[in-house]
Image (tube, rainbow, N blue to C red; front, side, top):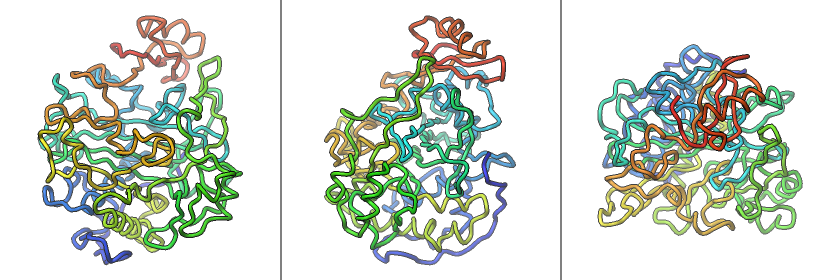
Amino acid sequence: MRHLIAYLFLCLVGITTQAHAANNCDVSGITTTDWLAPDPTSLAEVPNGIDANNCDFHIYSWRWFTYLLNPLGQTDQRNFEDRAIYPVVDLDTCTSLQTAAHPVLSHGGVTVGLAKQPDIPDQATGNALYDKNGNIVFYNRSFTANECGIFANGNFPDAGNANAGFPTGKDQVVELKTSWQILDPSVDNSSYYTQTVALEGEGDLLLGLIGAHIVVNTAIHPEFVWATFEHVSNAPNCTVNTGTGYTRPQPADGWNLVGPTCNACVAKNYADGTDLRTACASACDWNPSNKVQPLPQVDSNGNTIIKGTPSDICLVEYLGTSSTQSGAQTNIDNIEFLNTLLAGPGGLIATQGSTDMNVLQNYFLAGAVWTDMSSFDMSSTDPFNSDMAGSHALANSSMESFSQPNSNSSSFFDTGCFSCHGGATPQNTAEASHLLTSEPGAAPGLMNRCNVKADFYDQSGAEAQCPLACGSASNWNGNWINLVPGSVSACGCNTCVGN
């Protein structure tokens, strides 16, 4: 169960300048309520629109994060767990949404993305990530129902169009991916947003949120604004940065995504400017490439094996910013300023937040990337990717652990998010999605994998019913989840079929 209670915070507080003086952030007109309890209708477009500067995009990213983590009414969920707005990939499909057939689980949306889903605990490279205790890191992906409005030519509807059914009032698409670490319930876990889930073969597990990708399109930016947040204890910077701006101290019990032997070496060498990849080369297998990192393993019943060898992860580029990119220092200064303003020791979350929101002071904006529309090149085969802005080398230590730009894995990823999610054109904006297939007109077979309901509740029932539900034995991927105790379950199918 979450430790968090309902949030009723309406205080208006003026913002004063903090942190680096070199930033170009104008936050003078943003109230504390605007920061910590944003009106969703104010999130339809980046502040200042076509005239937005670098900091406006990072302001936009932070405000989306706090909005998504605000309580959902009087429930024990948060806005991002509202499956009526943010359905869950691998359970909900366009077909199920159109018939309002998707189930609502009382214990939150993340559960259905975890149980019996060996394809979920993996990175963008397909590899498994294991934390300092050797437990696999889990992932959950959500999309907005607006994605199902994709046109046959592969274009999303204009994000500037009115849509009364979406919280911002506009026809925007939002794609979310979150990462979750298994926590020890006997110790203090108050620095994490938590959820207890029942995982078949393991029983109840306490999970803590350690990462969040927030991908939002707008009328001016149909290629999406890509932002990512991390827990402060996830992983150190490969080159230690403790001396300026927003700093993350060495965790007393070690970094989440660093194994015990490596953590011990990092603790001894954690000094400003130290290159940990060199100082701890013999103790750490830093950010191993997908050639050596194992794939998620499953047992004979199709359950994910959650134990493995701890990974050793460090963040290659500070705040996702390559030293060679234009405006690198301004991008860093802006992110540091906002992280300090909101999540620093004397920041707004700690001093003005409610009991519900205080946990967010343990998360930081690791960067955001978008297209510089002033340099938009219509002659390019990929005009939205022709001039990246913001954090060019963006990566989340819990999600792109082995595919970080400028790392030792592969030069393929050196353009950050757009290495995999480029390809969008003004005639095919959906190509930038991280959920859609590359084929035009993907709906209603929108997601990579679909779950189909059937009447069974155990493994033997799954083996009998799922090949039928998925249309063939080869189309059942071996996964299933019990939706209604003792009766209705859902089978995981490789190719989407009607629900």
